[in-house]
Image (cartoon, one colour):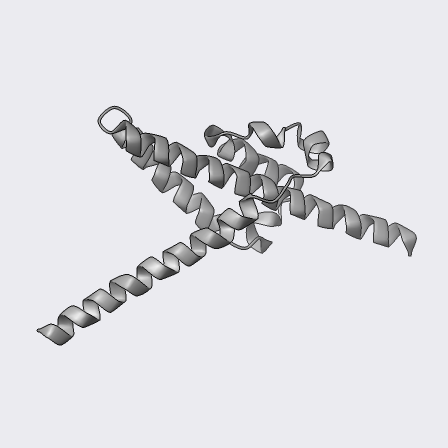
Length: 135
């Protein structure tokens, strides 16, 4: 019985550590500054990206850089996480406003991550185009 408890405790700790590690990776990426070229190309201001901008940013990703969803690390996972947190926010909006405000913060981080991923993809595409013209 004790060994089963230790096994369950260790498995829960491992899962929690994995989730924390995953979140820290994409949160640190979301904190990267956005370039002026993204703001000009997409018409978004990096300082005003909100919780509800995730869908718009994913649409821009599909429109401006269609291969991004396949090549970008974590974008699919962040999309799933965003949808789950959105449902959580809608569920607790009235009953528990503290969970709702936490969820909105998480949704804003997801939106910011999508903007940074789009920015990096566009920068790489423009660098490739400039390199092709130089050759």
